[in-house]
Amino acid sequence: MAVDLSNPEFLASLKARERQRSGKGMGRFALALVLLLLYLTPFYYLFVTVFKTTPEYAQKGVLELPDSLAPFIDNVVQAWTLAGMSQAMFNSLTYSLFGSILAVALAAAAAYGLTRLGLRSANGWFMLIFAGTLFPFQMYLVPLFFGYQRLGLINSWLGMLLIYTAICIPFPLLVLRNSFATISKEIDEAARIEGASEWRVFRSMIVPNAKGPLVALCLLQFTWIWNDLLFSSILASGNEVRSIMTALQSLQGTYASTGPNVVVTASLITSIPTVLLFIVLRKYFMSGLQLSTN
Image (cartoon, rainbow, N blue to C red):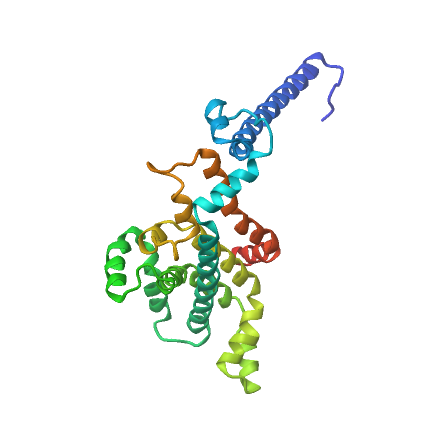
């Protein structure tokens, strides 16, 4: 159908459509800009706060720029010494490292048994393990506290490692069960024909083919344990075994003598290990997410 480009009505309709499209585009851009500013506001607050002294933070506006960058070192020293962050960071590092590795290893072994060994009632065993995640963790605190008290595990490194390992098993089991199910069973059969044991099949055939999900799960569980405050504040409040989040909590409250600038600086310090871990392992993390999605 021929269109008369010299028709005034046709040209007017084109201009109206173009104005409508440009108006929608400007509205979307404005909305995106507002959302970006809202997203960046906490980072700006963090930046301006860690470079302020306590009197300066009280006298100036919350979002005002600091007078100098020098107070940052003093804030770091105060946060590190007052909260005892060296011991707390070491405790959280060991809890997160050993707890995540043990949980993912046990979940991988369970997923292998459920998907490759032809166990009877495999779905029932899976639901039994995964059922622990259906209830809020607060329900476990009272029986767990009294049980730990009888066993002498309150304020102990072993007690924290046990609870973190147990809690972090169900989710990796869910992911690895689906991941292992996608691996061809012909690999197992060929290895068994060659005389490989089940342990050899698991270690040499299954684990290398699920490297991405395994690393991603270790990273996620490491982050969860590192950021936990619920169990660490109840089961490990002693200075020798408390986690980094419990130490961070000690800087706040009614009897805390530190200002918000020191608390924010301590929060910045506690976030550094997990951020660095994500940066170093981002390739495995993204590949693990992609495999899990597929």
